[in-house]
Length: 232
Ligand code: DC
Image (tube, rainbow, N blue to C red; front, side, top):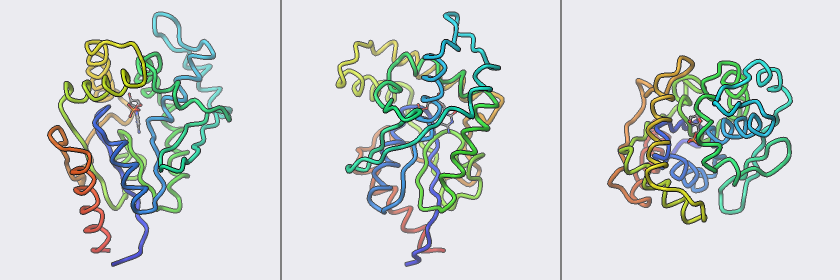
């Protein structure tokens, strides 16, 4: 088998389980895992904390764009293969998963300047390959030449259910209806925005995991990875 290192791009809808798949594959094959959505979430948290999002949801795009060079996002790898997101040195991993951030992240991710700054950071992270990155535009915009591209999907209800269970397990007081509304709203914004909309790359392999267990997903992905590598 070739020992060539590749870039693996996993794109798909929110809460489709792609982060779990990506993280588990990376840890199994000794690659670095990057959750690009966490980077958009970190910028959103920065905007919220600096009062750049008004109560009516409007964003001070000029101020946010000017602040981008001073927003530093890092990832701290954990022994279990997961990562903690650091925003200017502070661990914000738990905060960026809260509904306050989820509710505001899609409009922030639609801003051209934000996308351009984060795309640069993502390309830098993939410079030495051996990376699994998940997001919305990894196979289309960030790494159009990625050797392996997967597009993950599952029904909105199934995705909302998963996120709801995840959040309530962490003690967040949310309702299933609110989580579903957030999922549907984000799908719409992500698909219809002008800059790098969520779109399947023409050469991506589709996966609908609505009826799959995590173990089934893992073996499906690992098989595809081994197959891809063996052809290089
Ligand atoms: O995967 P997630 O739900 O944590 O992503 C949060 C938001 O960031 C989501 O609304 C879409 C956006 N995003 C994006 O536009 N491009 C990416 N590569 C990753 C995420």
